Image (tube, rainbow, N blue to C red; front, side, top):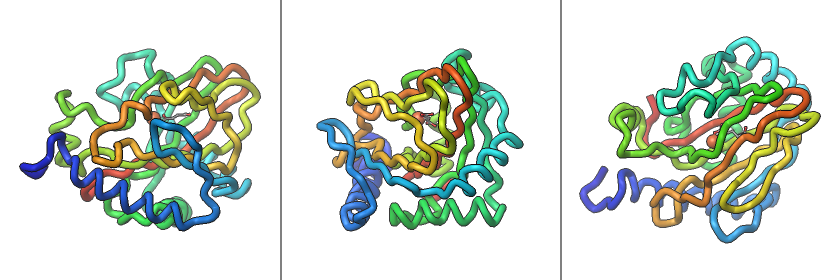
Length: 222
Ligand SMILES: O=C(O)CCC(=O)C(=O)O
Ligand SMILES: [Fe+2]
């Protein structure tokens, strides 16, 4: 945190936001989800059906109850199963690099891709992806790369019922469609956390839901 930052990593968040904004604006394959609150984008067919299938299989191998990993989530808050995909696996690496390249971000600031699976009744209640810097865990996260900037999240399968991504402040529900990648900036253009990015994975009603998520920090992630 520099001494001119009003909030931790504010300038870095503003800088990363600008880099990605410029990159995405020049990409005709990016669809902007128009809304007054947050920078939110979608890319159709980012992953092929084969890639989606392969990722689902990998998620089944690593998924554990999410609450075990997440110090900050009370039980019942995030009932999905999740786990990091092997960052040394060549297939995972290629997907990860494609996301880095799409956003034009330094691979060093990207976290390992996390896989997540929801079964009927499982959900991720409304939350923000950034870290609350007043919480105890922030000390650790600050040293591990700082605040989260952008989120990249891809749907891997058709969900029979439920499992939409609900942006509660914006007021839109996005239905999972395999291969689609969502991108959003967790910060405002000036680098403050954007409350408008509040979102939830609504409960799956029928079937299963598989997603991958990659979060970017402001500094080298470790
Ligand atoms: O499953 C979803 O639709 C949302 C997942 C999510 O919010 C996250 O992984 O941070
Ligand atoms: Fe999230």
